[in-house]
Every structure is written in structure tokens, then in C-alpha cells.
Length: 477
Image (cartoon, rainbow, N blue to C red):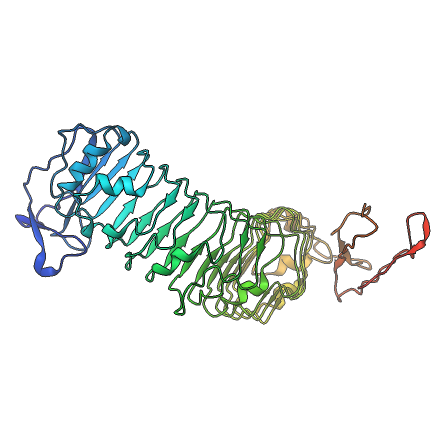
């Protein structure tokens, strides 16, 4: 599609057509009244730069086969082809080869099987001016060494939803300026040091996406491939099958500011692995995992972290004392949509003085200690909406709080002059009362209660197991 939106009175008789690789002295001018050629299978427009009234970009978007004699206008910089292009792939690449300075090329659903096939068909393309290449939704299974060496000017490479299983060590050799690589929806199930050696060639890479690849383990030193630090800022490993993150998994990534581990199968927080990112990590998403509890020191010493998302974890039952320790930059904590969450400890946060927003929207909380709010001096919002809060002696304080947001029905059930006789502690149900456990196994039961002053909890444990009087119970608490 050709992009054209000329503002009357602001545009001179001739407009420059530039690519990011041209200097100010090399600007090419496109006459305002130029007739731009567009293949019949495409929609063509021209847009004017929002920052430079003289700058216009011509682009073509095609969703039908292109005839052999169809050609894009030579000044076209952006070409997006989607679907059915396998029927006219050679014609498309021949037309792209006639473009003077193509800047962005997208070839989706073109039945491309190899990158070599793409480069061979585009042998005449001026790859030196191409900054964005999208070969998503094709059939590529392997990236061979030096596959993109002709396209050394690439800044963004999108290979989403192919069938890539293997990337050779030197696959991205020559892409010294690549800043973004998206490999979403492929079959790169192994993240080990040997499997990730291709990362070493990408010295300018700041954003790497490996979502939905079936990854099940993040091995130690998987991202450490050279002596110099990796430049990566954003690492997305969401929607995988990750069950284990080894302690040194993120060693070699001292600059990462955003990490996605969402929608996977983690059952515990990879505490030690995350501390390797303590000086740089600002945003962490672990939503949609299989955590049963946030235990003491689950998150600790992540001094740069500002936002943590722990939403939609169906098994999550409780957030324990000092789950977050020494999180001095932490501002926002999201724990929404955890329907089984019935207990959040009054001392869940320790040395986290800058928290302003805690979201517990849509959980299973019947009560929250007032001391939870008192322990967070910067708190501006505690969202408790869509929780089964019961306004009694433990939660009547909510009515007087100026930071806590609850459903209006909760406040309507608060007594004007409560006379809570005794006000016994409210025990959170954190385990089943009947368990079936093999005699050789160990198991842990958690008991937590809300009350003021803080209740003392004692266990009443039988000394015998089952009907065998010779089996004694060993209890540690």
C-alpha cells in the first residue's frame, strides 16, 4: 500500500523520499503530483511524516497473487504481502528487486520453507536498505549459518509462527545492528548454552521474544556466550512449559529490564536465578503459572524492580510473611484473579517503602489485616474488589480507610457501632482436612490466621499414623 496524506499549504512542490540509511545530503525528492504505480492485487497509500512535513513514505499491502507483469512503484519503501503469495512469489521478489530503497518487507503465509529460498528469489533486492524483515507464518524449520548475511542492515527480524527447531551457531552472523528478534510460536524447546550460541553474534540485540516454543527448562548460563555482557534489555519467555529455572539461568544478562515468564508451569519462584538480575530488572511478569504459595523470601533483593505481576494463578493459596524482602524500588504489585488466594500476611512486604499500588482484585480473601496497610507507608491504593470480604471485627477498618477499594456491598454490611464479642482469629483454610499420602513421602501443612493482636498458632498432631501403632509421626514446625 502507498502511504499518502498531504497537508494543504504545508507541502512544497517536491517531497523528499529517504530511507533510514540516507544522510541529510542524500535525500531523494518525490514530486507531490507524482503518479505512483500499484499492482492490481494491492492496496496502495502514501503517508506524510508527523515530524517532517516534507517526508512521505510509499507503501503497498497485498493479499492476493501478483501477476508476472505487475510492478511496485520504484519509490515504494514498505511492502506487506499476506497469504497466497506462494503462487506469485517469484513475481513479488522480482518487483521488490526493482525498488530503489526498500525499507520494510513483510512476506507472511508465503509457503517459504528456507531462508535460502527467500534470499535466492530476492537476489536482486537492495538488501542494504531493508531495516525490517517479517517472514512470519511460513514453514521454515531451520536457520542455517549466515542465512541473513545479505541483509546486514536489518534492525528488526520477525520469524513468528514458523516451525523452527534448530538455529545454527552462526545463523545471524553479520547482523551487527539487529535490535529486535521475534521467534514466537516456533519449536525451540531447548534453552541451553549450546542451543543459544546463535545469540553471540547479535551484539546490538535489545529485545528477544521466545514465546510459545514449548521450552520446559531454562538451563544455567543459557544466555552467556561471550566475555562481554549481553546487550539484551527485554526477554520474553512467556507461554512456554517451563517447570524449572536453574540458579544460573540468567547469568550474563546484566542489562535486562523486563522479563516475561508468564503462562508457564512454574510451581515455585526461581528466587536465586532472579537475583542475577537484581541491579537491572524493572518489570517482571510471572502471571498464569502454577504457584501454590509465595513463601518467605520468594522475592528478595531485587532492588531495581518496580512492577511485578502475579495474576491468574489458579493454585495460589497464600502470600506468606516476608514474601517480598528488600524491594526498595517496588511500586506496583499485581495479584489479581487468584481465586484460591485466601490469606495475605500482614508482613508480606519487608523493606519495600515505595509501594503505591497493590491489586488483589478478584481473589478469595475474606479478611485482610489492617496492619498490612499500615506497613506500607507510600500505599495509595489497595484494590480488594470482587473478594468475599466479610465486614466484621477483622475488616471493619476498611470502612475508614482512604486507600482501600472494596465492593459497595461490603461497606453496607459494616455495623455502625460494632460490638465484636471476643473477635476470635479467623483461620485461613490452606489445606484439605483429609490427606492420602504414601508412608514414604513427606508433606507440608500451612496454617495462617488473621487477628489482632497477632494470634499464636499451635498444632494438635496425632502421635500415630493410621492403624499401625508402630509408625510414629515426625513433626517439624
